[in-house]
Each structure stands twice: as C-alpha cells, then as structure tokens.
Length: 162
Image (cartoon, rainbow, N blue to C red; front, top):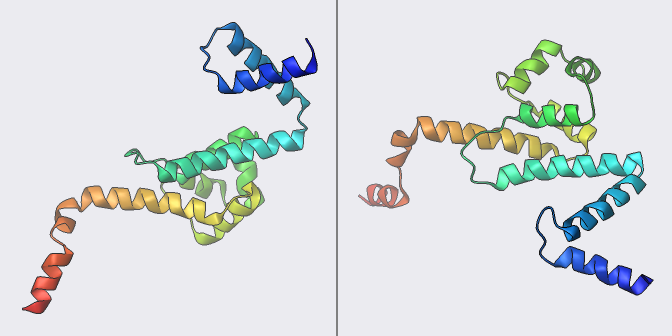
C-alpha cells in the first residue's frame, strides 16, 4: 500500500461511519493506540488535564439535575495522577480532615483554594467556583421554589406604579 492510499484510508476512517467490532473500527483503534504510544509523558499529562477540564466545563453547561461536587472533580484529578489525598492536603497546607470535608461537600471551597487548584491543575480558578455556585443555586432553587415563584418583573412594575 503506497503513502497516498494510507492517507486516504486514514481520512476515511475519521469521516466514515463505523460500528464497534468491525474491521474499520479495529483499524481505527490500532491507529489511535499507536499514536498514543508515541506521546511523551508530558503530552499524556496535558491530555489528561484537558480531558478533566472539559468534563468540568461540560458539567457547567449541562442542564443535569444531579449535582457533581467540586470534590468529585478534585478526586478525579487526584486519581488520574495517582496523588493520595493525605499527600495533597499537606502539599497545599490544609489538614487532611478539611480536605475530606471539601471532597464530601461538607465544606465549601474558598477563593484561595480555588486559586491553588487552578494553579496546580492548570485551569481557571473560576471553573471550580462556578461548579460550587451551580450546585448551590440548584439546591436553593429546590428548597425555595414556592417562595421565589411569587416574584416577577410585571408584578414589581405594577406594584411600584400604584
């Protein structure tokens, strides 16, 4: 097979529909595996960091009604890079019990820790705070739904005009 045929096959593999278990799928999987073996450890780390960041961004943009705690994402980072919670807590200068509470959602993330997480994991600290805020707003809206429903712009305008 010449170089032109190989390149044509690669393009087809990336654009044509394929089913799991087919020859085309297996060829595509082999291409991906070979490419991944060629990556340096630094490249692999960058890919893992991007994947986790995308999961966080995806959660923020989703209409999902199930909360994912900041701690869930932090655990994913720690697990991905095989960092023990105890070691991480000591590294960032907090007690392990406080880190455990943060991971379980029993303690809120503060702005300083958001900056630390953003620096360590190479993402925007606001991402961490936005996840926490999304969850808090969702929980409050469930609890205060009836009370909040009574408010409207039309009602406000009509009451102010009278």
